[in-house]
Length: 90
Image 1 (cartoon, helix red, strand yellow):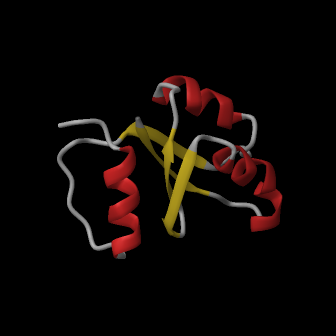
Image 2 (spheres, rainbow, N blue to C red):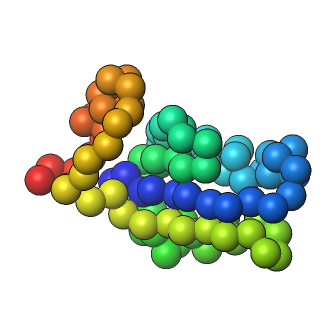
């Protein structure tokens, strides 16, 4: 399953190394927009989101949701290829 992880972070970017490492530790990931990641994982949005909460600071914002089979966007072909590999069958 692909999860969409998006955030608004208030601290200096170097304060979030543990968050970024946690995102990279999943099965696979794509990061083509500054505050949005696509993460291939077997975890639910709820479970994965809860694992990230302790890696952000008070006042930050975090949204973790499943990647919908209905989508549209402007991304590099490399991103669409990655999505094609990891998205669940429609």
